[in-house]
Length: 260
Length: 334
Ligand SMILES: Nc1ncnc2c1ncn2[C@@H]1O[C@H](COP(=O)(O)OP(=O)(O)OP(=O)(O)O)[C@@H](O)[C@H]1O
Ligand SMILES: [Mg+2]
Image 1 (spheres, each protein chain N blue to C red):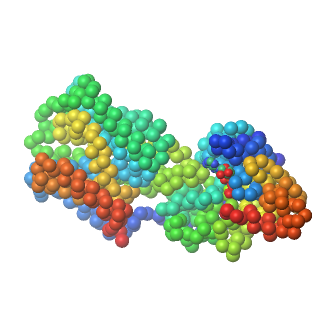
Image 2 (cartoon, each protein chain N blue to C red):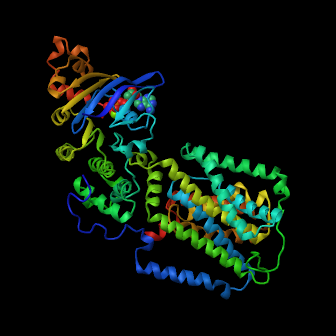
Image 3 (spheres, protein in one colour):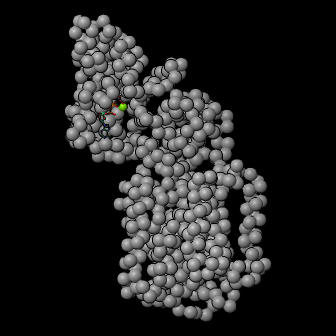
């Protein structure tokens, strides 16, 4: 059953069409990987779904709610949590306070919110950093903080923008383990990710965007064979026999990470 | 992860994270001494000059703290707070001179008027970010002052003189002994500090700080940012209005130049910035230092005092901005 349905979304910035007639559905309990080269329109789509941008056309449905026209805080209260590609923790607040603020949506009392926030910090393994200021954390730690903060609003659907981008290679397994555990708890996830090996291994399904349009939608094993996807990442010269040798899995990954 | 599951945390709920100002027993003792000193002051220093000076410190500290609720905690820098001061002053004065209202009722009536005005101003202006919001509030302050100058019903440029009455608590006038003014100002300040203290440790304060840090991220965790900015504005305007009403009753004369000038808006902001923005004690510390200083320069330099004030303020502000952005309170905490 569909949990989130994106129906014909078009979003323009002046003359630039960032999202063009995008449609796909996310099933309850699945992990959907959203991929595409830099500038494909992935983050823009997240901003449309969560109410930061209003699309020129289309609708987004979440359970039985229409989302277009709602404010970001209203979308969150319906049960959609998100992280940001360009991290936005509350810098001058402590790690614990960052998560408390989010937990207060359901626990107005600071004491109760504190207890709940600590549990989410345990979950992302940041409890020992609870009294540090958010600005003093490393990138990987701040990603986990944003994850804990998003989870503390008790969402049913989580949108994660760039889970491993800019993160030390050694901490990637920790982050992936976290995502696995989130799914076990019954959350539905949409994950934007440039690391092809990562996204192909964690996703049940992949939606690929290119220049604002959906160019592939299906299970990872099928999507990787999609000719348009390979073209999108490597340019058509790589698909002709002369450059074919370089269109390996690694090449695919390297091209995608260019701007992350 | 449903709450209640996951790892049990041993010290969950072992006290809310308290700001350093109230963490120790020493803090409480210091507070008690401060309060006793404030209560005893008029009985020790009997000169009217001293009493008047401390009344001003209390009044300005209260205004700066009220500003701090909106600008310090919630991050919305207003440079038009004189509008609410003037609203409080004029509402109580006009109700009294025109319809014979009791001045205390006038003070209470000023509050909802200022709050309503604050919402009318805040609704459109909060769409603006950072500096643009500050500039918009300056413009609104100037517009309101110009309107007041041209509005004959409230005295226009001539202003209003309040009737001199016999001493009584009910009439809000105390001439033979001016102590009651002192205590009224003290009560207003303590009330404002208590409300700020309460805000700091409830959800309201956490939401305000999140909005100050990053309004978009705040929205992503379900905070209706516009509504909370308006709440901060309302609380702030309410106290500033009460301060304005008090001022009118204390001085018994008001005109657009004394209760609605841009310089007042800037002074309110300055006191909080120098003392420490976003802290409970910063605005009081700022007022306790700068108000006597400005009196001193006025006496020293006579008629040209105003310009010297500004020079000193400007110098202090630059010093604070460069060396101690957390204000004087930040200095004490190190
Ligand atoms: N606020 C904006 N104003 C104008 N153009 C924008 C804005 N935000 C995004 N764009 C443009 O829209 C297109 C899609 O951007 P978007 O950030 O959604 O891409 P993305 O798929 O997330 O890319 P990346 O992988 O680099 O994060 C890009 O061409 C980008 O320059
Ligand atoms: Mg992006």
